[in-house]
Amino acid sequence: MGTKNTSVRPPAESRNDGKDHSSQCGGVTHDNVRHTTRFTVVGNHLAQHTELSLLAIGLAVHIQSLPSGARVDINSLASRFPEGKTRIAGALRELETHGYLRRTRIRTQQGRMVTRTVSCNQPGRTGGEDGPSPPPRPRRTAEQPPRRRVLPAVPEPVYPTPDLLQTALGVLSGLRRTDPRLLISATDAEHLVPGVAAWLERDLTPEDVHRALTTALPPEPLHRPAALLAHRLSAQLPPLPPFRAERPSARHPLQNCDTCDRAYRSPEPGTCAGCAPGP
View 1 (cartoon, one colour):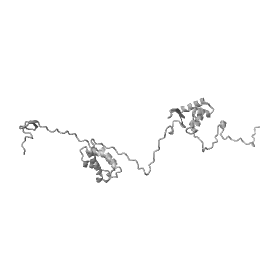
View 2 (spheres, one colour; view 1 turned 90 degrees about the horizontal axis):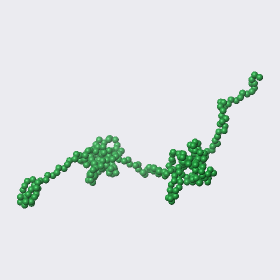
View 3 (spheres, one colour; view 1 turned 90 degrees about the vertical axis):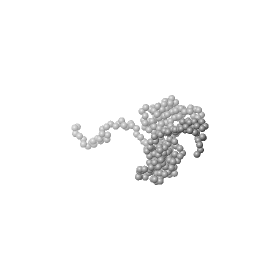
View 4 (cartoon, helix red, strand yellow; view 1 turned 60 degrees about the vertical axis):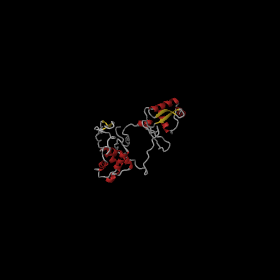
């Protein structure tokens, strides 16, 4: 009895290394076929939600599969499913609490109050369906020139008289004679004229302003000469001249004419201009 039978084949070793996986035999297996038409993408955050009831999850999937404009009020859903109005109303409140549904009361143009329902397939994020989407930005075509960059601000004159502005425009027009790179457009000149006028108000001659704008220019090409001029007009603006009060004109005292006894102003007594002898 103690001898070993060598003709008996040894038992086969377990493929799972002795671990018992019998509990997995009852698990689900998937036999999936790829959908190409009539399907709805549902996130696992909804399908495996831990706080929603099974009725609420199924109702959310049904609502997400409907086209826009379909009726999802309690009466319409109760006529479609056997759960009844009470249970369907509770499921809708669950979806509303967890953000899968938004319901608002609005008034139509006819004065009727209706409920507007918005289904959210991912709470906390919006795809712009709650309102009109902004119009797309037009693409730049070959016919549309690029948008002009805004020039820096320039100082403003205190008294922009027409003669002062005309002189300032003449200063800008003459810059290109000193440096051809300072050729500017009419639009740029209209922007720079007040800055040149502010310089002329500070007791500077047109030659002084011309010299200040054309001296020590950079050697490289000027891609935006108007921007350079605007910067110089603002950064190098000279101070206002000191205030000089006008001296009042001297008024002579009143004198009585020795001939006609009329009053007239003169530094010394004598005769008035009417009684003075002719040349």
